[in-house]
Length: 297
Figure 1 (tube, helix red, strand yellow):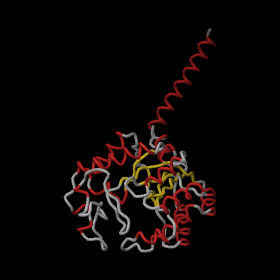
Figure 2 (cartoon, rainbow, N blue to C red; figure 1 turned 135 degrees about the vertical axis):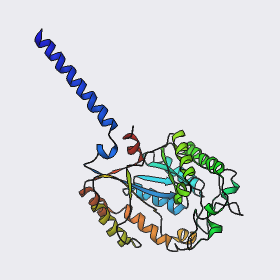
Figure 3 (cartoon, rainbow, N blue to C red; figure 1 turned 90 degrees about the vertical axis):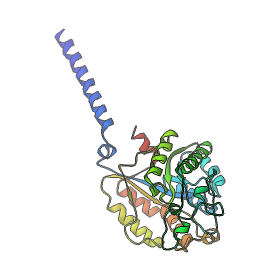
């Protein structure tokens, strides 16, 4: 009898300890749960803007180590992007919320009636904020934009993306549109939660090249230098794959005339086998947004 009670008590104690441990693990932040490892989310942005960009994004996924891709819904090559993404259901996809149309020779408009967000031709403004190449007349923030039109437009972009891309997992922000006003960030967070696409990024640190990165060779060296400096934690690296061809050379943006060459370098980086071997040798685990969502539940 004593032995039975002792064993029962011991069994209950073990179960109790396991429950407590499970609760503690659930409550631990991601950084604490994975404090001994380096996790890197490699993301490609701007799918949908050109055919070249769509092709390059698929190359970066199929032949490389890009784990997530962001698609711009109102962009001209969105229909092709949808077909490509539906053919690759394991590729993690985000809707790249857009309130700007920055290129000189290709443009896109809102999906909704949003006159406060557009120029005299009905296109999105080129930039959010004025800079040395685009003055106040080209910057959305310098015009009387309306929050309700922002909310309506972004909701429509999310809805269309969800209707056409089954594996959509999150939202992201084209050209920093979320930072144009705190109210816009709140709207985006609310929409993301409403559509089941919210991901808490508070413990994810954004990283970039560690050094010059205009040429492909510079990209290789600066990317490797960056990953060699990473300490345990969760990181996000993003860039823009595309191809160095006549299509990309023609899109043109003031101050970014070498866009085709630059973005070909990103594609070459994301498919470079030596860089991938360096990632593996460094013990870095490549993740996507689906991984983040799963570990936040």
